[in-house]
Amino acid sequence: MSLYPVPRSEDTFTMKNIFLHYLAPLLLALPATAVALPDSNTIEFSNCMLALPGTPHSAAARCGTLEVPENPADPEGRKISLHIGLAPASGRTTEPDPVFFFAGGPGQAASETWVMLRPVLNKIRKSRDIVMIDQRGTGQSNKLACSSELAEDLNQEIDLELIRTETEKCLAELDGDPRFYTSTIAMGDYNRVRQAMGYDKINIMGVSYGTRTAQVYLREFPETVRTVTLDSVVPMQLALGQEHAPMLDHSVYSVFADCANDETCNALYPGHAEELNELFISLREQPQMISLINPVSGEHQEMHLTADTLAVAIRFLSYSSETQALIPLLVHEALETGELGRLASQAILVMTGLNEMLSRGMELSVLCSEDYPAIDFSADYSKTLMGNLFLEIIDLQCKVWPHGEVPTDFHQPVVSELPVLLMSGERDPVTPPHYAAQAAETYSNSLNLVAKGQAHSVMKNICLRDITTEFIEKGSVEDLDTRCVERIRPAPFFTSLLGPDP
Image (tube, rainbow, N blue to C red; front, side):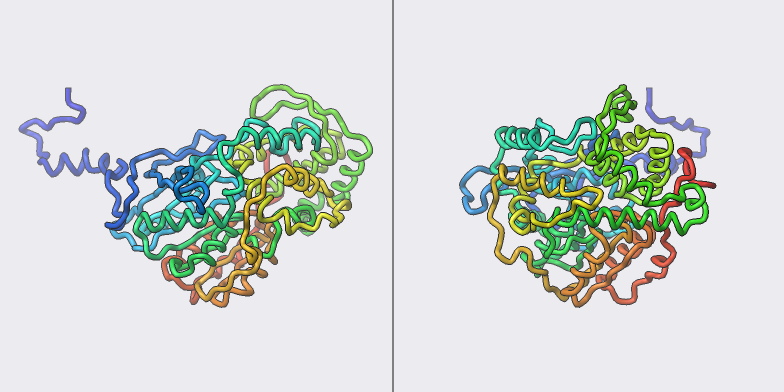
């Protein structure tokens, strides 16, 4: 029995009709069996599905591997395999300069972000390949995975001694030497991939921590770069973790200030930031045992909620404009009724997705080698929402974790005349707009855009998506149409658990 209808002799179909009506649409939907890579490409790619951890979502791509030495100074020593995701250009012609995407974290695998990236880069991909390398220590590139739980966990009280023990366990079970998983060594890997794929020039694009690695790549291999796109910028001068506490406060209090200036939000939640401060004070004096249904597992659980765990919850709710819009409602509800379960549940939802995406071993290799030596641990953030907790955890873990070698000029700003597009969210809790402004000081050919009311990772906004596309197509920051930036607005505040007013 045929899979397709066979026309009878009296039908008017021709063989051309059969192809156009039945076979062509199906063939167009199939992944390509060959990719128009440069002739000098030496990496073998095959069809694959790239999945987003913690979700059922996946997307078709091409995948390949490249073997590199774990220790670059010992090329004959142990080898690790780098995993490379490739989304070939979808149009009829392919430009010779692809986009290399640098993932965030530290600890996120670039190939695992393709499900989220695909709609953002859809227009760019019409004429350019998208290359996503799992940075060494992440994803399928010898992931420095820990069976022990190093992530912040709202389900148990934060215990520094437990964190020390779990860090030691993680280190003992690693399949790899964490000293060789720094940003600088990883960018050498990226250049090897570029060479192996036969590309001369590339467009580099980073988000969050990925903006650091993109800038390291730019400094190390400037002759290979055509354009630079930086979303939620980490300036090279910054020691990651140093300012997490004050930047969170700035973001959260900006949310409440915007609520005060919104007629509906102000009427519903007139206490504003004072309610949040009152909630923290009460939990510092008397932590609470709360009961809730875990939104991920669906199971009933008890939780010991302290001011520290509330700070973790607020931090994760601050990462997007949509979840920021919930904060005034949840805080008001918690203070008015004593119902803290919904606040904790929302944070668990956000945290679960983030934690499943990150390689904690790789994260520590980066932080302890590159940032720990530059952090001022005498800084006192005790009056902030998060307090000194984050610094205490970094100090504890990095006293356990091995430190890799880092260039002496690592934290010096990168100087370049290449076209650089920088983007930030006005209410970003980790990489606020003044970070991008600081980085832009040494980029003489740059454009710095701030999205009003947005939080972390803003390129997904349709306005900034279109600007990024135009920037990469032109290869210049000159004469870009940025008028839509003035029309960007934050997500509307929730007036109830059902959402904002229509």
